[in-house]
Image (spheres, rainbow, N blue to C red):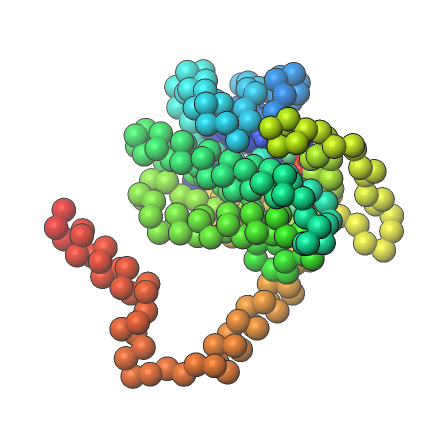
Length: 295
Ligand SMILES: NC(=O)c1ccc[n+]([C@@H]2O[C@H](COP(=O)([O-])OP(=O)(O)OC[C@H]3O[C@@H](n4cnc5c(N)ncnc54)[C@H](O)[C@@H]3O)[C@@H](O)[C@H]2O)c1
């Protein structure tokens, strides 16, 4: 997608942090916005701030772990604007640093319900509608540097949920019709309200937790500021990038992981004369070609 003017974007987790920065970047490019998040008042306040930038914006309470909320959000967006062109599938939570054996089962299920099932259910609802709408559309799934680089210790649930988003989004790329594109936003460590995700944990997942102090920005290590993430993301969508990396710091972690994988292949396997007969991608492509021929 090359131009966002007069397009309509839905952003989950849009009242804070990365989602809100994407909303501001979209408004700067004259794109209309639907802000979806857990609290209606916060959605309205965020939408008012975006509308003040000269575009149409509405706020809609939507808990991405509730399929009825997701459908109602999509209905409201299409009813208000007549079309939707972009989904920023961004809502996400973290549960802080906990060693794996001590990981609370309620937290693990909450993280997966929001970060994976919420992301998946939003994606499928909008995908079905984008297919029917039959015009150019884009889905940007927010994953993390933890999806592709170093799985940060003591974040088992978060790492696993973000790896799951990478896993299914990478596959979608090959399944989607030509008019729908997809990207994977992998931010580095970013200054947002994610440390306070627990304060908004819903009753069905165990209820709210106490707030945590915000991270000091003047020590030896500190997060990136959020302010460039939205504009960077839009620029990469325009270029057709699948992986969107707003930050440099995880590059060496991704390199180390990929080098280790290739070194393990090289140390443990060798190419047989018929290895291509066992190549699952080529196998899939031949099945697809046969199916296309039949249709
Ligand atoms: N901040 C980071 O360091 C970082 C790094 C990599 C990836 N991310 C990812 O970026 C995305 C945005 O996070 P952020 O850092 O801006 O955090 P944030 O807490 O500032 O924003 C996340 C928003 O998601 C909303 N949300 C939580 N559960 C929800 C639900 N069930 N339904 C709808 N909305 C819900 C929250 O209310 C909040 O407004 C997340 O997917 C997060 O995992 C963040």
